[in-house]
Length: 216
Image (cartoon, rainbow, N blue to C red; front, side, top):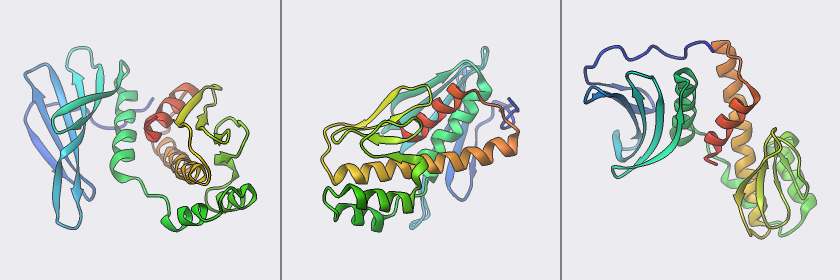
């Protein structure tokens, strides 16, 4: 896998700002490099410090751990022995938390107003996310699906990834739209990354990144 970014080569503390986030880098007691990413408040031009995504890299063995940090409490997202894949996972997690486009409120409103009409739901979903990303009332690999009560993603490894349980219509239609929207967005993002960095990912690696992006 081609390297995604330059390694942090110095122990000095620094910070970098960009249009989306503030990124803080530091050396943690000579044991780990830590990178924390916070979201900027666009309206007030300040930063939300209550929540961040943190990456810790062991200096010696290069193993990486990713955390969601809420009010200084760390929740492990994933850990990676391959530091280059870990960098990619870190990017995907940061993007999913801070840079995602959001599903359309007007589409969600349309779905809420159709009751349990499956034909109308199919038409709306196909128009707005495409038939490659959802399947109503039947399991299809690589799609967000449901069985009238539970909404799930069926991976290319044929694993059922639960999204929500016991959700009635039309609320289930809205959830299928939301996650189908993110699934489509993930595919678009990965095509750009793979093309830019000339990456070759295994199927299971892509599925792992997809689950990170869906937060599932």
